[in-house]
Length: 276
Image 1 (cartoon, rainbow, N blue to C red):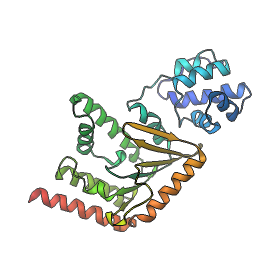
Image 2: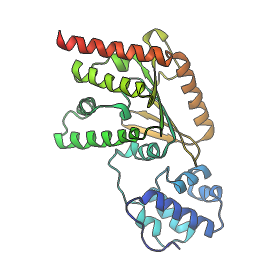
Image 3: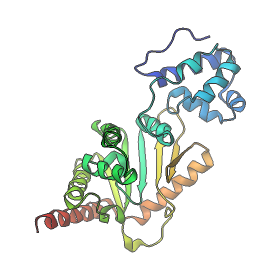
Image 4: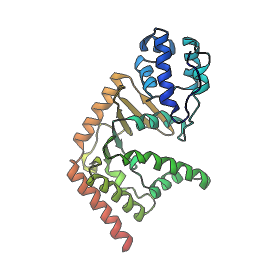
């Protein structure tokens, strides 16, 4: 049985490593443990490398199956997330990803948002929330964006609907700043961005946003969202389907150079309008 409690500085990764040790000690494969937990073998692998959280429900079952004396139940709650419940696993996986590909139909992706823009988004989502709550949500979103401080990892490739550029969030000054931030990241070759223009008509992801994540030691994941909900998907056939969806989106979008020109043009329009 695993022994002392984990170092709280990185509980998820350490807990995953302990899970692997306990599983191997019990002479069980990932698939065999997954069958008993009613999840896939790849899900178990993702918990072991830290791309998926061991939930309290799973922790209790793991303790019972592997005879670990409550170790996983005691430790699974450490490092409580600052993100909404439906986004916790996706945010944690995002932090481990080598590459993130995201389609945004309505608003700038969270990783690319500036403070003023993010604050307006959260105020719209929760119009009666106190300012302290808006502050916490905004801070958490800006913390996520620190992933881009690394010069190369993760690779971030975004496809933006033209509506993202045209929807005025927080006023023209906020929009000019938000789009200038995106163009600066593109010109620094930190991200790749494409725009699907209105003229492209119907495309493969009119139903909503899509995020794909790939990892060094775990299978890829897809994340899809709805109103206050989110699903992190690992079924290979489903992820393959969503990958094709994203590939078709990039085919419908303007090439990167033309996309950059469009984003810069819209940003300039916002900038000129605020001085008019």
